[in-house]
Amino acid sequence: MIPKQSAEAGQTGVFPAVSDQDSWPEASSQLLKLMMAKVNSVFIGKSDVVTRMFVALLAGGHVLLEDVPGVGKTLLVRAIARVMGGEFRRIQFTSDMLPADVVGGLVWDGKRGELVFRQGPLMANVVLADEINRTPPRTQSALLEAMGERSVTADGETMQLPQPFMLLATQNPLSDDGTYPLPEAQLDRFMMRLSVGYPSVEDEISMLENGAQRLQPEQLRPVVIPEEWLRMQRDAQSVHVHTSLLGYAVRIAGATRSAPELLLGASPRATRDWVCAAQAAAYVAGRRFVVPDDLKETAQSVLAHRLMMKDEAAAAGLQATELLDRMIAAEPIPAPAGDSSRRRR
Image (cartoon, rainbow, N blue to C red; front, side, top):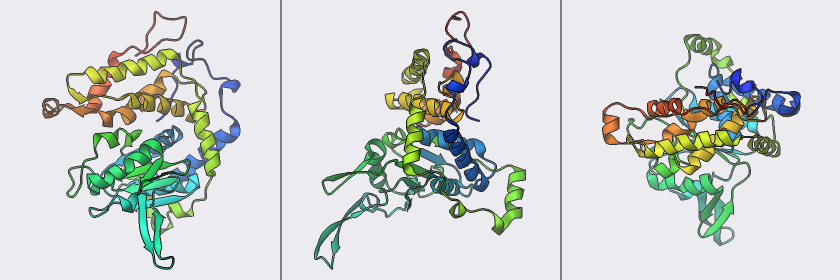
């Protein structure tokens, strides 16, 4: 669960104890709790996944949900889009989809007798890219500008996307028939890759018992408007990060770039996203400062999908998540100021 604060992290110095002045206004905290509670009422038994989703979105990032079919990936995104407010659009990716189907383009208007620009489904606040890896790389690449610059270019004209803009994509495992791997440049633009997983026995029984009476995403009412969500994002991005923790993040990212088992390590954008995610995790916890646990708890979701294993390491059965765990365990965590003799693992 994100995030948790250890007793050592609450000491004075670099990681101070929480006081009334260090927490966020009650209104913002209550809105965030209400949003997550509403999503959890629809997406049962996966509160940790819901929390991570909100952490990524508060940090201004995009999320890739990767899992087997039928575990509720699309349901989760629809529920989040409802409580967010603003405009929501869904793109069902297929093998015959073209870039113009995503970003828009010129179409002939018979009444006006001229070509007019038709906006694509990307022109929305929350966009669901459903089964993104079922469309060829050419169409996948149409999302790169939108994810990186929050704009789209069609027929030589560049248009800014609505603010906030959040792309929530789902994909099935790459071993499935009819899927295409996402290019590295696109994976690097996803702040987090998350897996939903199967529900527990109790949650699955509850789902079957409720049946048709189960609450649907369309029954949820928006909790905030886009302007309020933008304010919450700005608050999350203003959370204090001590210089020693920035150095900690940079050293781990640097270790991935020089690791002999990796063909591709974490980019500077990955380091930035990791710090932003830690800030958002602290915001969700109600703190105005980042503690080491915020970085540790978000590391796998933010970094692992950006690491490319060498063939020999993959053949030996080594996973990127396992390698990342080793690097994090090997790097000493900065101790609170005034206690340089102690390091926490």
